[in-house]
Image (cartoon, rainbow, N blue to C red; front, side, top):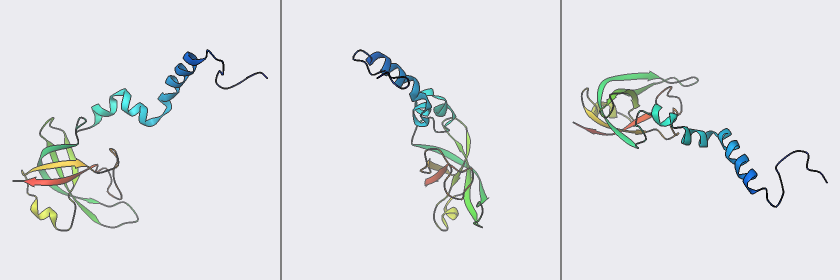
Length: 131
């Protein structure tokens, strides 16, 4: 029976199989993100899990449809590279603990660099406030 399509199945086809697998891996989104290095350059944290920043202003971001709310966020300038990001302030009334020019610790929001829920464009959250 002749193998017209598909992978080689011969006893000495190991190198060919390995090379094909290596080429096809680039179609995998996660592999490409990890190995190209462009995602790391675009990441404001530069590969770190947390980052410190200075609060520039408090902002209210409108929730996406069908929800109607103003999500309390802060505009933060990171200390390590000067990039400005928006960070969500979680829990009820916690925006009252944050003032402008405070130093805050920022972490990711939990979806590997994507915005969460109904808050558009916000990929980070405040985890600690130090005056």
